[in-house]
Length: 198
Ligand SMILES: [Zn+2]
Image (cartoon, rainbow, N blue to C red):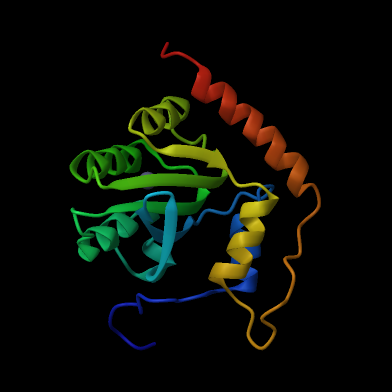
C-alpha cells in the first residue's frame, strides 16, 4: 500500500462499506463520518465541494494509534482555516453518535469558531459510555443540531459519499426495517434531548 496521507478531496466510500457501517440495525466496531460544508450567505447555502469527504476512526487494525473519527475530522476542519469573516454550516453524518471526549472537543471547536454552525446526523446512538445521553444534551447546548439519520439522509449519503463505479444513478438499496428503526431512535433521541440533567 502506498504511504502518505489519504487524498482529502472527494474520496468516496465503497458501497459495501457504507451499507455495513451505516446500517442502523447493525453494531460494527468502526465509526465512519461523512462531512460537507456550505457557506451561508443570507438565506442561501452555497455548497463547497472542496470540503466534502469522509473519515473513519483509526485503530490498531490499521497499525495506527487509536483515534476517533471526530478528532480526525476536527483536525481536518481546523486545517481548512475557514474564513472568520464568513459564515459556514458544517454537516456530519456519523455512523455512531460521539463519545464524551469527542463531544467535548467538538464543543470546544465551536466555542472558538463562532462562524461555524454544526449539524450532526447519526445512524445510531452509541451507549457504550456512561453518560452517553448527557453527551448528546451537551452537544445540543453547544449549539449543535443533533438528529438521527432518516431514509432521506441515508439516501443522500449514498448519492454523495459512495462510489458507484460506472452506475452513477444506482438507487439507494434500503435494508429491512430502516425506517422503523430510524423512527424508534428518533423518538429516543428526542426524549434524551428533552430530559433535564439529573
Ligand atoms: Zn470519540
